Length: 100
Image 1 (cartoon, rainbow, N blue to C red):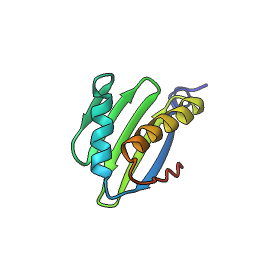
Image 2 (cartoon, helix red, strand yellow):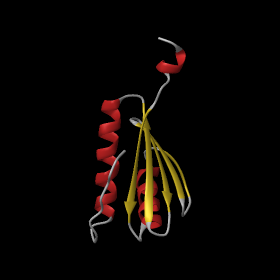
Image 3 (cartoon, rainbow, N blue to C red):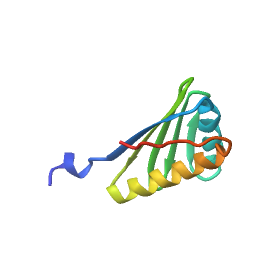
Image 4 (cartoon, rainbow, N blue to C red):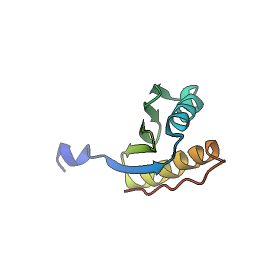
């Protein structure tokens, strides 16, 4: 196995339609800031979790979530964890996470 395949990361992206993208991005980063390394402002966020990394970008009508992990099993778990947390913050609306 060469070093490139050993270091390959599993990635996934979801674009979630919402008018509250910045709010959810900041809530998620603040929520995890006491446990994990986070960096964020009103439009971009990064969270380094044990499972992998989440990067978020807030636009006027959507929240883009990019995840990266070391393996497919961790990626599936990270998708569920991130989506469930955002859904709790977004209890006033129903969000759709279409992961690619």
